[in-house]
Image (cartoon, rainbow, N blue to C red; front, top):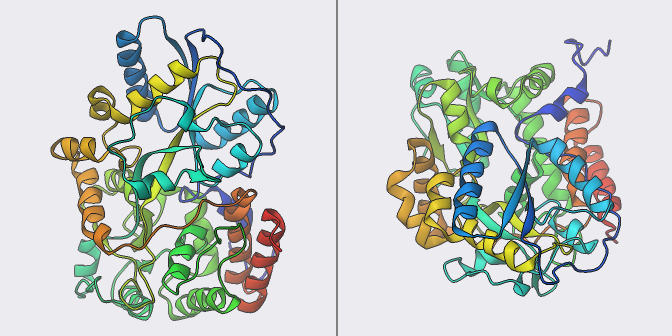
Length: 434
């Protein structure tokens, strides 16, 4: 047993963490010619998610087919990791689904392999989708994905545990990362729960927020690394300092938290006071916790060069280049994005709707947890800078790479500088950066 890993829990168990939910980047074969033709009215429709998502999406499918005679849909729901494995096989075999969910980590990969149809070729009403939201699915002058909805990172805080520790809630409009480190250190020292569980410090999207606050970014528009060694060194040094101060757990406890998954993570079980999550994850955590959480801005938003937070596309609707019926596929995507029937069922599960008119319409109907996220997004939106570019081809492995180097750091197997060098070297190779 490694002396720095006394629990005996495999470090690889970190990869089970619910906060990532990302599989390795798909290896795709090039696709064949465009589909379309006269159209046969038969659509394969693929998505990933939980059982509740599967249930309401099927209801959306039923509502769509009831209004569109001559179109039949074969639904294929799946869980996240299995979805990408199946999609890779399907695309490689030139048998891709007609309409499918996509993720920003893989959007450019699939488009680059000629697997996705430029959506300008379809009749989809985009009049109620903001330009910055549309940009999240655009590159090389074309649209390969339309955001289902938007979400944002937030620091979720258990107010009851803050009160139990005898502390007051910080002012999230002015606080810095140093303030956050001190707050979580005090929470650990004065309460019965750890200040922050640290499971998000290996999330490359959260690091991207940190880099953006310094005027940098995880990637550049031309597919290179967009941050400096100094910025990532500062990130990892903060993690080490917080660990040594007791603000976050020791390495073995972090491993255990990852292995437990989101539903049993410290925030959900009241053994941790704070953690960073996407706004559309609030409901699942609150339902396990059984009490309300508060949302705070990520530290450093007012102290850096620019705000680092941005509205991320929760996921995208895309269409296969080999679809057997372009017109029918366009109708389905349009229905998913714009119809009352769709949004009344979807609400905020796939992010706060990208259709702003529908977003405003459904606000009164949102469950309390989704309303909490919606109010947070409304509050921060006027402050935000333009979002980051679409990740380059090969970037789907960034989460695994970041997780791997994070593990070596928290177990003191590598220094801060070695951790940064390993991440930059491995990710540069993955995306073909110069």
